[in-house]
Length: 125
Image 1 (cartoon, one colour):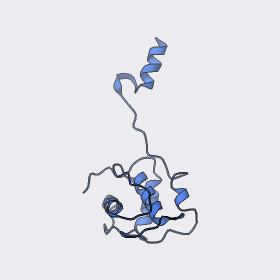
Image 2 (cartoon, one colour):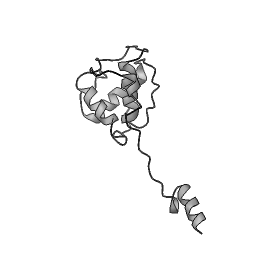
Image 3 (cartoon, helix red, strand yellow):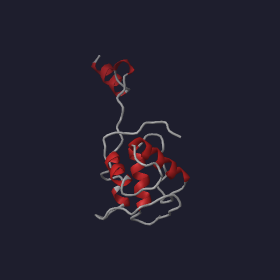
Image 4 (spheres, helix red, strand yellow):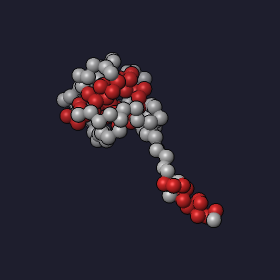
């Protein structure tokens, strides 16, 4: 009986109730993309930085941790997908949604990425 109960819990809980897993935090995840104490520079669509440290890679990593659904490839290329995710983030954060990662966006993006779960779950275009 105890074995069956343990197996049921490991398979998703009693009655099929499952707990949502939280997104990982930035510790040990995005740090490898920005190993300096200086703030990241402003970046926007068209920027390419595939070296390390890379502000574009850091932005992509932060966006992946801040919002559900985007799953950006962290490649250092600020293309249309990264721009869409940036605008979506800015809309969720209720800041100017210009796709530009500047002084208004970076602090919020870092804070959201460091949260224990996805803050933005909106299905925006």
